[in-house]
Amino acid sequence: MHEEKKQICGNFTIRKQPIRWYVMLLPSSHRGLATGLKEERERRMKYGEPVFDYFAPSYVEVKKIKGKFVKTDCPLLYNYVFIRATVDEIFHLKRNLPQYNFLPKVKGEKEDYYPYLSDRAMENLKWVADSYSNVLPVYVPKSETLVKGDRVRITEGQFKGAEATVVIQPGAGMKDIMVSVENWMLVPLLHVKPGQYEVISLNEDSKHVYSSLDNQRVISRLHGALKYLHHAEGIPETDRQFAREVLSQYGNLRMETDVMRCKLYSILLPAYVLAGDQEAFNALASTVESILPAVKAGQSKALLLVTLYGCTDNSIYYAKAHQLTHSWRMEKNPKKSKLQLLRWLDDFDEWYGHE
Image (cartoon, rainbow, N blue to C red; front, side, top):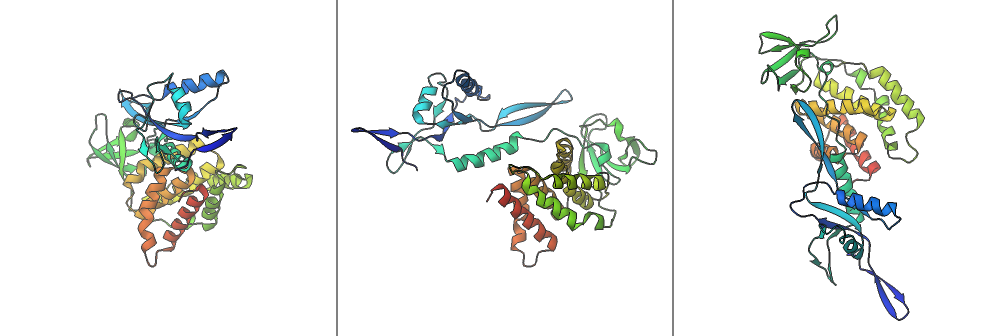
């Protein structure tokens, strides 16, 4: 633990308290957000008084109410907040906000102290919390993202509980996707409203030539450009233009197997984020989230998770990607494709400063 700094003033020694991220506890009856701290901070800023930093992470909870998705902010850490200040400053703050309390003191080697987090630990906590607060928008896979052979489960409406297989895709004069419900009834998917079905498996029957999506020049260039996402100078215009060219080449492709769709999405995700098309990236990322449970091939699932981590620096994708690929590092002769994914993962860890 850091000792308090001492300042000599004449014949007296003044103990200068350190500024730390102290852990504060709210009463058990408190379930809302830390609005009091926000208002106090804004008041101090308005009147030119010394301000303080605080961290009260929240997450977005999505509920379906009367057929509509509703988002609400909820506290991520139940009844805990963090305030960066000295102990005396926090006690001064408590005069106006007495509901915020320190955790009980713990014994140190030289003296007792209130629990606190180091700056490094707080950086990591903020990174994890951001993964929950910056959630992807609620998004139901559009019918055009499904292909012949995919299976869906109807979750609401008159066909609730039924499983259906896509038998006809849009195109050739067809406006809607037709699905076979219980092997005897064909229903346009248009009659099943968004939010009333979920993907349960992807088509794995068709075989395709891989060469069009196995262009190492394109894949390597997109991967290398991701390191500029968090650079102060931003993404070079040459890389942005390259991403736009990739989107014009691959953006309208439709693949009919889970493996091929995973390969395609692993190209489109970085291309969208590098081109600056956040709306298209969010839509595709949400589609990927919705089909991940249905992807059976472990390497394809790892490809999507590593790509999502590289595009978002999200701690949830970080953890899932490392968990899924950890055993590969123990293999004596892993495939080249696995080695490439491991290199990408190591690159992202280095670029984003994660161990």
